[in-house]
Figure (cartoon, rainbow, N blue to C red):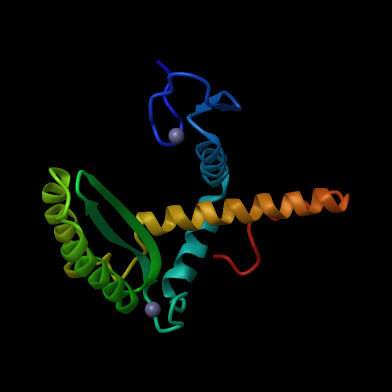
Length: 183
Ligand SMILES: [Zn+2]
Ligand SMILES: [Zn+2]
């Protein structure tokens, strides 16, 4: 049986195809293309861009770095329905702590009120928030997750630029293998 090349869900019928890969839906197809393009970028270019983000200012509060990926975990319930989700975001530690503390509180208030999954997922998500708060990513070097997100972002920018150039009817410039200033 086929499975989605991006999210690994099983595909029973249909799905999207792109370059020999199958995806369960359009969102996964687009994400899959980005991951593929990201894997083609020169490693030193991705690394230098990742270091720049890591040492740069926080995109949320413009405060001092280091900046990395911090994940907040949420759960809410209503009778027999329970919904849980995890939300990674790029920020400084201070912004991350505020977001994770907010999610922790919201889990404690909204999580329990569903049977049976509210009782299972509320402690799980509460603990995941606490672990995220007391064990943040290393300060000295960017995490692998940050590098992956930066690579996907660079791939998305590259595709957008190529589309803009195509729309303008100008032949695309050949990008330099090593960007100026990168070590
Ligand atoms: Zn998928
Ligand atoms: Zn911040």
